[in-house]
Length: 282
Image (cartoon, rainbow, N blue to C red):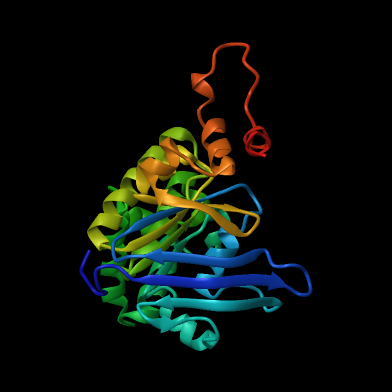
């Protein structure tokens, strides 16, 4: 893949709060830091604020969202930026890999055309150069036959192939920041392993910083060097992946780790829950 952007972004989130309408905030006082090339995992139960945080960074929250605090990408403030200005960043300096490829892809357009749109919007409107970029990035995400894939419609591709097309869309312009929102949840174990390997290799090649959101702690430990744990819209623990997964300090983080290690339990042992660890701490 030909270089365009720089070697990863610096992301600084300070005191971020997000609410919808008159409801109480779903994210409160959130601080995050991401260095160039760093991979930061965000874990926590459904409803803890992970995806909402990612959408706030991308500027994709609905109109009724109330956002306060600061989100700076390479020093540039994103909160309050116009949608037009954010659109120039999305797909260029920032890319996002969404969870469900069937809703992320347009069923009426070929895969190649959808990837080419991102390239032509931000890089070069020439059809020939766009086609070359599409074939290059499809090859980079693991396709042996990028021409066939480029000319295929989403329904003609498997789930794993569609997810790799979504990944190609996010990476075609070599963004400085890549946000992955549960990118392997809908995939079976074999396809998931392939997608993760490809993602790992391409992130290294692109040199992008990465926010990786997942319920799967094994996946996060494989991809990320550092981890934050979210609960009820707040960060309750942060540290290296090794520290968080092997020596968690917060009872909620300890509960998450315990539920991911059920294979270590003796037969007949009562399954642990997050609530067990929270109660134990009180």
